[in-house]
Length: 130
Length: 235
Length: 254
Image 1: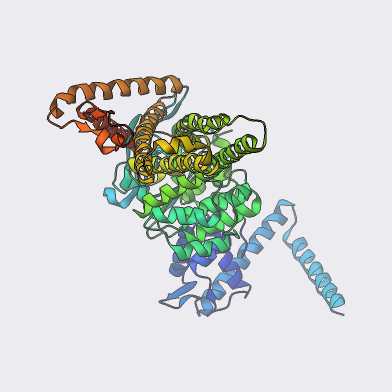
Image 2: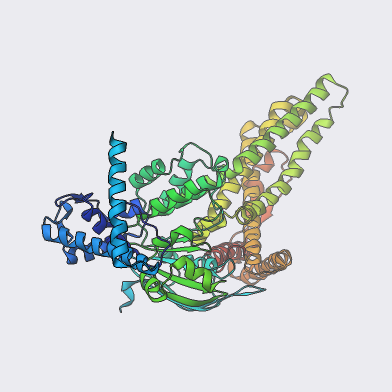
């Protein structure tokens, strides 16, 4: 886990975002054990109270659950994974669309470009695999 | 809030040196379990404040309460103070320094000291005089972290030391800090990448507090990192 | 007790090198003089020099050391460690006093040991005056004890003067000197004031106690302690005052 702390976003929110991202990409799967608060704090070199706050929020959001004496785990609730995933996808697409709009591209032109790049990247990948 | 819920209360603290007024009425209240950053440029009074709390300087006015105790021998037993300067007896070996400190503080944890020694990669047989500045800084930190002192005061623990010692010290602080029973103040004139250590920060400027608050709240309110805020305030 | 012992051991460790160094030099010097007297051209009276020189130098050295042990704590910033310790100030001062008394004892032993080792044979005349070995040991011990008492009280005044000087920002040397003079004057006043209270004490017949009549039956050495009791009490009071000031008022250099 890697977080850039030089930004203005509260650190506990950045930690939550990072967990969401890893859940959405499948790096963290339901049932996976997450590091203990102290461990993560040491790993990220972050105040333990900040990590505690992040974990508490994640529990409220239903991303993780803490089983007494066993640790904290990613919740086995598929809809939360889906929800997180679609949230992230929406965010990514939003960013992309806004960037395109800023460059003055129309909806059609944007979609066309996406189609072309999609093809090229896929064929490039096939070439690589060969 | 009851006084006993505060690890440290400072009220209107004043300290004057022959040539300069170092503290012009500083008041802070530290809740138990938090790590506070005491931030300010050199000469802003950070060190003076910590030394007054540790009982190494006598304030000219105001009050100090450590866990409800006035400055006293009893209060000193509750404080682990790590000054910026080298305060260790140079002829001692690392092991002798640990044994010396252990004899005076009942909250000394021999096992923790051993673990920290290993973590900090210090040779117990090395003489203090042969250690580099970074290594001496590591050793001084062990003296504070091997105790379960309710109040830990670190004066410029990162200043002028190599990056790897700095990393070890940051990680050591996070690993050993026992939030349930401990409270910590870290003073620094260079916030840099240490800002994620702090629950709250106090900006000290020429002996006066000009900004203080919860670190996350400050980030949200000002839309800036503490480091950027620090640079702006002291530009 | 464990804490106090740690403090003493710390100060003793600091004393070790300078004391060993001086002892070594003294013994080498004595051996050199002895060699010159026996195999060289030096007159046997030069032996007196070999004993007198260290005897004259050691007191100055010890006074400087008692000042130095305190000064070095400030110079090397170790006073931060001392002032942060949760121990009574008088223990810090007593540890230094004990350690300095050990230094005194070592130097005393070096003087006596070196003298008897290298010049024992040359002092035959002196031996013939003395009645017995037990007499020498007995009186030697009391010379040692009297020196120790004088030195300890000196240390106490030095400590007081030094600690008070550290409580002021400037002219520390002048303050130290002034405190020394004032404290001595006060102790003297106390001695005079308290003397009448102790008139009832008997006069001590020290010539009997020290077996001086074994040398010459005509020697009379009597002493009435009344005049000195106030001095001792004042010195003890100053010792605890120093400890109190160290614990409550002294600061690190800023």
